Image (cartoon, one colour):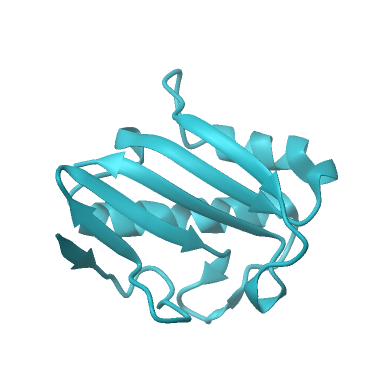
Length: 124
């Protein structure tokens, strides 16, 4: 088991790793839509923030020797399920016809006032 860390994704905001590589899998911690260059939540629509979270996941997977094409499962946490359609539009652009298994859960709140957080599991 080894920790995965890259400056191309936001630093962890607590006592956890950006990702862990173990037994042929990469487990990516939930990614808020934080721009790693500014350290702030991405501006714009929920689509823009979905894209930022997915780009963060992609950078962590790349650092681990994996990629978005190897994602087998994601979990999306949103504070407003009414935006589910917009999230899907942006999320779907990252996967071709072989989309991973997924769950989407509405939560009361997320860190830093974010409205979306996405975690992923991928093969190496």
